[in-house]
Every structure is written in structure tokens, then in C-alpha cells.
Amino acid sequence: MFYKSMLLLLPAFTSEYNVFGPRTDLEKKYGTFSEEMRLEMLEETRKMFYHGYDNYMNHAFPLDELNPLECNGRGPDHEHPDNININDVLGDYSLTLVDALDTLAIIGNYTEFRRAVKLVVDTVDFDKPNVVQVFEANIRLLGGLLSAHLLMDDPNFSNLTPDWYLDDLLGLAHDLADRLLPAFEQTSTGLPFPRVNLKTGLPEDGRFSTCTAGVGSLLLEFILLSRLIGDPIYEIYVRKAVKNLFKFRNRYTGLLGNVIDINTGEWLGKISGLGAGIDSFYEILLKSYIMFGKQEDKQMFEESYASIKQFMRRGRSECNRGSGLHPLYVNVEMDSGDTATSWVDSLQASFPGVQVLYGDVDEAICHHALYYSMWLKYGCLPERYNWKLDAPDVKFYPLRPELMESTYLLYRATKNPFYLHVGRDILYSLNNHTRAVCGYATVHDVTDMSLEDRQESFFLSETVKYLYLLFDFDNPLNKNGNSYVFTTEGHILPLSESYYSNKADYEDLFSILSEDEFDMGMSDIPINSTTINFSPLTSCDKISTETRFSLPLRNQYLQQIFAAFGVA
Image 1: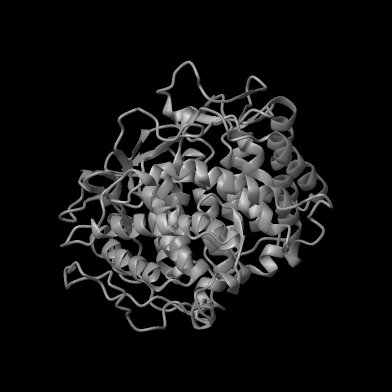
Image 2 (image 1 turned 90 degrees about the vertical axis):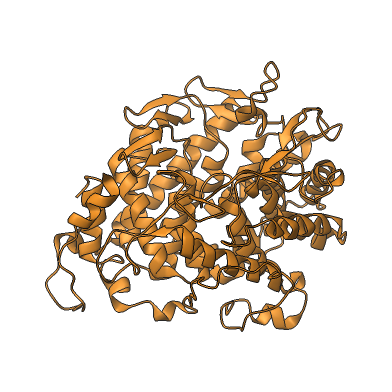
């Protein structure tokens, strides 16, 4: 068994670190990263972006996505309306271009950014009878439009704005949001329907179930739109949805399930975890607090994180101390906290980034190391990995960005060159295994690296963006990192005092853990009193010398997790 075998692989524990002592083989491998190598990786990432972007523009635009093997484009599957794998996402709105707008700004190609904005304004029309998922339209389209619009007014990205621009992208975002509102208007619980017909409103498909992430991940974009156009309706709907969703959590564990009936609030799926169907709910609670300063968002996140640490976490109690199994967050039954499955999924690889944002850097280091080891084993991340059988349960990899996101954020927090090596390994794997004649292709099976013909829009909006930012030390975003927040689709939103309810909330932005507990009416459901009392870091200055200058995960623990995956 993979997980239990890790205990047998744990070397002797050393309590102190001597920065001047002899270096281990792993410290020699990961301890330095030359400037020449960094610049080479930056250029290789730039080439990766343009290979995906140029081929989309040449072979697929104005369709939604690129087929990189056949060198053509794709839109909705009109012949098979029930093909939600395609139709939830694609809607004849040039998705890849909208999703990639702010990546063009990050790459520094302002000329192409302005041309792309013009193309979006001239060609994108949401008045089409396509049924799309509210969640996907929100994070990919609404977020992409708002991000590009705001960056044009950002002093750190000067000269982005075309001379003809008159808030056209904001107008498109407003139009799209209005087409998503019917999802909220006919539900007694306030939880939105999962899909809308962009032209006619609610589809007649009889579907009344939605995932937790689909309800709880709309805060950033909807609230930001309300603040920008001065119409509170979007914020009212999403705040009601999230608050009511949170009230349906279990009274004993404080956990939420993964699928809920929007009419009754009954949980139809009772698995609670950090992966698909629920992952971004936690992320957006924390980011919404950072963006808007609403204390109830902070409290909901902190209560949820305490329950996560108590019921989902397995392994030794501290990442870099003690003995025992490498920490692992498992899927559990929401009503009891008992282990529910023997698999974890690739979307969970983003949660170390959430832990970094919250200040729990040491825990993020351990969490990230497990997914990096998995990447080394397969050359990418299988969609589901069975930790009991030591084998993938679901074998495809659609170029997902989650490990890149966590790698970038951990590097920004620790400045440890270990994470530059991780980025290089990811970049090499993508180029060696997924590069196709006309872009980058989904891995169909991680065990044989066979490919399928799809380059999802998030490859350019997230995967490549996080890799580029990892290696671009001089990027305006990295030089002003405390001025932005990333959406769950990797879109960049500038922080502004004007989005805050009051001055005090704004000044407390980067000390979010120093206040006493708040009673915002969110704790009316009693939670098990044994909940972990976790006090995360409030400053990167508290990161240890060892984490900064040696391996972020101590040598013996890194050996342990590498050996468990057979990559030592």
C-alpha cells in the first residue's frame, strides 16, 4: 500500500538544521538555480504561450477552443446537447481569446493585447441560444473580461488601453452577467441553477442539482461587477447563495458535501474534500475577504479550514517535524469525517496555494510535495490518483494549472530555488509529452502518454501564466504582488480601497489573522468543540532559515515522499 509504505521509508529525524553543514544530494540538486537557467526557462515559457496562442488564432478563432492535433477549432456540440463536457464550457464566444487577454498583458505584448481586445469587442456576442454552465461562464468569461478591463486602468500596466476604448469589455461583462441572473431568480434557497440558456434563460432540462463550487465560487466576479457599475443586484444574489450554502453544512463536522439540491438544500453527494466539485469554494471565500474586506467571508473560511484540518488531514501532525506518514488530505463523509474514498484528484493540487495565501506555509510545503512527487512519477497529474492502490483511477490530464499555481505561490512566499526546479520539470514535461503540431494537447492516458485533440482555454489563461510569472522576476505583477488577487481561473484583479466597506477593513488587508473571532451570525450551527485551534503565520519573515536556504521540506521527509512514489 502506497500510503502506509511511507512510514517504512522515513529516515532518522534530525531536530536542528546547520546552514553551514554538508549538503545532501537533494540539497545539491535543488539548492541553486542559475540566472542563465531562469532566463532560459522564461524564454521557453514565452515560446510555449505563443505556440498555443498563435495556433489558436491561426486555426481556431473565432471558435472557442483549438484542436491541436487536427489544427482546427471547435465550438459547442450542437448535435449532442447532453455532451456537457463540451457544452458546459463552449458557447460560441471565442472563449480562448477572452480567457487569455490578461496573459497577453502579463507576457508584455501590449500590441497584441490591444488587437485582441478589438477582436473581442467586434466579434463576441452572447445573444445565442447555447446552454452553458454558470460556473464556467463566470470564471472564464466574466473574470477574463473584468480583468482585462481593469488592467487597462492599472498604472503598473501602462499603455495597454486602445485610444478608442470606452469600457467596451465592461459592457460585455454586464451583458453576460445579466444572462446568468436567471439561474438565481427561481430558486427558493437562493442557490443558483447550474446552467442557463444565454438567450432564453433557464433551460428545460429538469436539473436541480449543482456542485458546491458551482454555488460558492461566484463571489469575486459578481461582486466586483456590482462595485464597478453601481448595481448591487449581482452581489445580493451571490452573497445570499453563499451564506445559505454555508448554513447547510453538517452540524457536527462543519463540513459541506459536494452536490446539493438547489430547491431543498438536501445533500445529494456527501463526499467532502478539496478537489473537484468543492475546491474553489474555500479558495474564493478567502480571496473574497481579501478583495472586499467582508468579515463573514473570513469567518466562513476559517471555520471551514479548521474542519478541514480536523477531519480530512491524515499523517504526522507537523510537516517538518516528528515521525509518521507524510500528510495527506483525503475525501471524507461530511456527516462523520470518516474516510470516504481512497483517491484524491488533481484539482486538489491548487489548495497549497490557498494555504500559502492564508499563511499556513509549512503545511502548503508538505501538501505541494505530494503532488510534485506524483508529477515526477507520471510526467503530469492523473485526474484521480488512488493512494491505496498506488495507481491512477482516472488517467487523463487536460493541461490543468493547479500544481503550477501552487508552485508559483510557494516560490513567491519562500524564494526557495526548489520551486524553480519544480517549474522547470513541469515545463520540460509539457514540452516533451503534450506539445503538438498546432498547440498543446490533452494527455488521454498518463500511463502511455497518448494524446487527445483538445487544448482547453485554461492552458493559456492559467498554466502558462503561472509558469511565466514563476520565472519572470521583473514582471510588474511580481514587483507589486500585494496589489492583486488571482481568481480561480488565474485572472488578475487589482485590489482597490474603493471595493471595501470601510477604511478599517482595507488597512487590515494583509493582517487577516490577527483579529479576534467575529460573530457575524455565521456560527449559529454548533461545531464539534475539538476543532483544531490553528494559528497560521502572519508574515513571511517567520519562514525558517531552513525553508529559505535549504530544502523547504526537510531532506528526510522529501526522501520519504519521493521514495513512496518511486522517484527517489
